[in-house]
Length: 231
Image 1 (cartoon, one colour):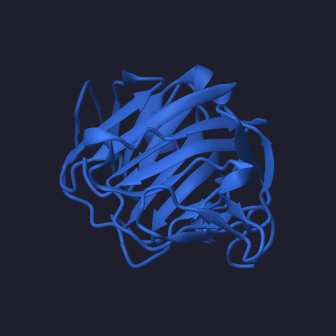
Image 2 (cartoon, one colour; image 1 turned 135 degrees about the vertical axis):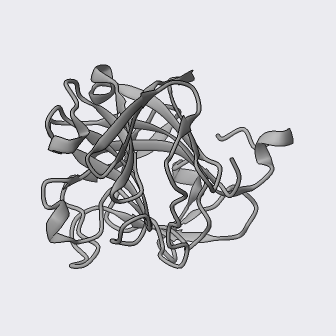
């Protein structure tokens, strides 16, 4: 169960433990444990053993546009920080969280990349990333493609990003166009993105776009998801 006590609860707009007891079988929704009263449609996800109790499994076929495969559509909300336990299955790049819309500086995408996924990212190792669309934070993390790992990604709403893997703040590259700069600690963007908060975020898949055909829907498990509207 997510620890939503004290300061950790401040600004939490969605929290999902994905236990059987948090699923309403009558209306097919998951219970939001943040206290906001939001509902999330269960969709075609299935329960499996999670990192803590139960989690949900995604089949790598999630297609929101065609309403196919396993994905969850979350309520439209302001996203500044996302944390979850995630276990990727199989090889290849994948998107596990897609917020915002398909336009430069208007997205908030969390996913896995492989070396060479995008030429301008110039990555020699597998890793994870936060993509604002043509403005990206790329984190080398070869072991992230195996077993359970905890990801906590925080953006201050302007130009600062922090990306932690298993509780460790990671160095990474900030990519803008063809320019990439390597940084540590709080990563500084060259400009402030403006993700579209009117679009419901998608868990387990991306939004259809021919430019992102190589970025597959997520195959694996997600557990203990929490979203905040603060850094």
